[in-house]
Length: 113
Length: 113
Image (cartoon, rainbow over all chains, first blue to last red; front, side):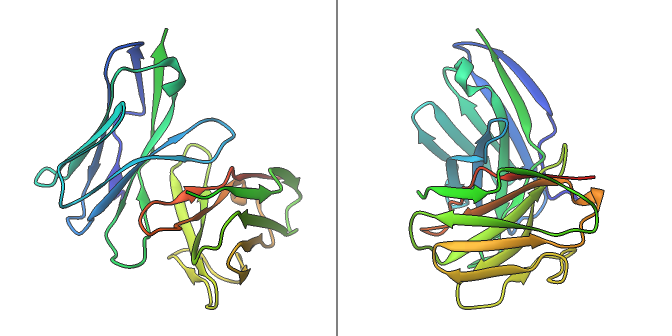
């Protein structure tokens, strides 16, 4: 049972436009969410996080939105740049104090120049 | 954040043998995690390795197959024992220096023939 789902395996966006990556989860106990970017042959790089007490968190070009009632979060990248081309993973944690995360299957973003 | 290195970066091993993967962090951290990413799959947590205590394994992973050492606050090893082709994966260590956000090493790409 996949508790964290990224239903779009891939996404292509023109440079300068907005990229929206989506993530759905099934467990209402999840209370902290992370987004990671992964380039080939490298480990995941932490991008941005959000706590369940918030519905939005912004860091430069990256904004994460959380809709708890829909159990949905999204990562917005504005403006998209070719260097953003990577696989993006969302991750969710809900076991208090253990910091254990369940990762989604990833979305491959390609930003076209 | 934290800077994490892993050795080896990749290896090709014969079935039935064992490989020990090293993870070195540039600062002292209490919590360290080991993940596996099988081809085309997401990241799956193998175990949590906190210094001074036995590693805690996730469902489907056992100590006999994946023994872990955590001799100090900057170092850990994961051994993949009695390998089979199904163990071919990327193995990643991560740390959580300040709680929720986890930072990953570059990974070890293992191929078992």
